[in-house]
Length: 89
Image 1 (tube, rainbow, N blue to C red):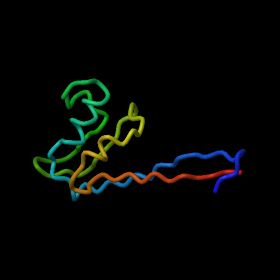
Image 2 (image 1 turned 60 degrees about the vertical axis):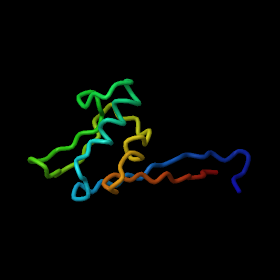
Image 3 (image 1 turned 90 degrees about the vertical axis):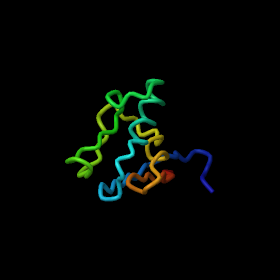
Image 4 (image 1 turned 180 degrees about the horizontal axis):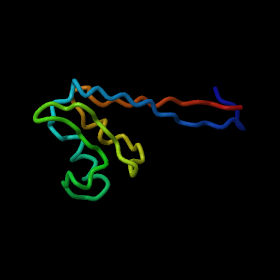
């Protein structure tokens, strides 16, 4: 159990596996909906970079605040986030 004066910080470990991406765009749409209240891929902070149907890279742009909604929307395991609580005395 953490001491009363201990500082707790939440670290987020992010893993992206482009090979698991189905290019369904649920992560992209979840981001634009949560952040801007519209389904607008151009407003999303998530970018799927690829060639045709193949995703080569999943990228989060600078405006991303790591809220995790895009990770929660991914049903294929291409994007995962683990929240780790770190206690500093």
